[in-house]
Amino acid sequence: MPLTTERRPISKSLWAGRVVSALVVLMLLADSVAKIVKAAPVLKAQADLGFPDSLTVGIGIILLICTCVYAIPRTSILGAILLTGFLGGAIAVKLRIGDSLFGQTLFPAYIGIMAWGGLFLREDRLRTLIPLLRERRG
Image (cartoon, rainbow, N blue to C red; front, top):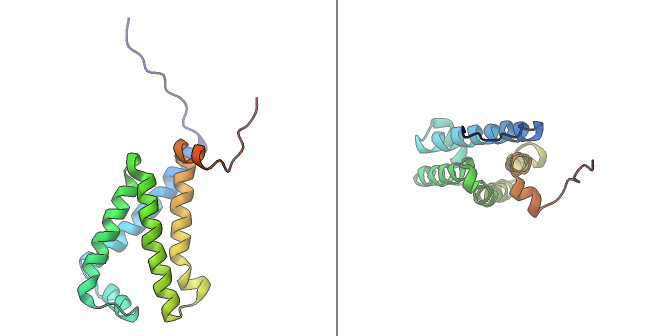
C-alpha cells in the first residue's frame, strides 16, 4: 500500500500573505544590504537623520537579522515583533527631525502593517491568537 499525503488546497489568503510578506522581505533586505555596503545615498540619509557613518553597518546588520527571522516560517512571529521594534525606532527618529507625517514619518509604520498583515494572512497560529476574522459557517 503506497504512502500518500493529503494536501489541502492553498487558500487565496495564504497566497496573498506570502506575496505581501515577500514584498516586505525584499524591501527590508534591499535596505539592510544598502546599509551594510554603505551606499552613498544611505550614508547621506543616515547623516540627515543624525547618525554617524560608523553606525550604518551595525544598523544594517540588525535589520538583516530581524528580516531573516521574519522570513523563516517557524520564527516569523518573533521576526515581526523584532521588526516592529526596529520600525518603531525609525518612526521616532523621523519624528525627532520633523519629517512630514504621512510621507516620511509613517512610512516605517506602513511597512510594519504590511509585515503583520502578510503574517496574519498566512499564519494560522496568529489568527488563533488574534481572531480578527470570523470563521465562515457551513
